[in-house]
Length: 150
Image 1 (cartoon, one colour):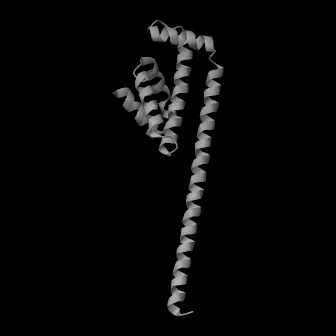
Image 2 (cartoon, one colour):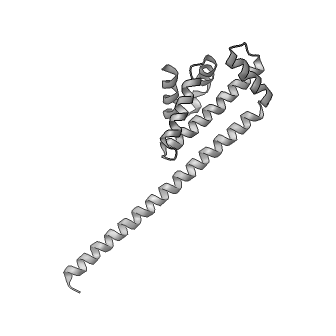
Image 3 (cartoon, one colour):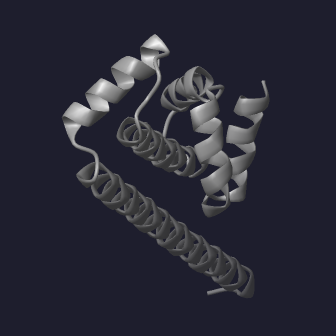
């Protein structure tokens, strides 16, 4: 084989190795992203399950009915609402994490933002948020704070 052809074969071989390494790197990153997303979803599901365990459904229903009607809440009803808001926050943060990773489409993320707009102005939500916001990621805190201040 001539030196020129041999050089081209070596160059093509090097490009093949580089392309193969790039592909392996991409696959590793994708596997890591999927594992992180699954971990995040599992954590959110567990946290919601724990919070829900302490809030019987009748109490939540009664509390939300009174809450929507603007009536005074008992301590138990207030706690039920706060736990429900906590679950909603976990759901939103999980959606935000997935959205940032490109695993949640724009339509679903927009729906989360719209639901934030509905809830985030209520004083009970703001009180809960101020007490718990440091336990959330910075980028998510910025989004919720922006929704509250709108």
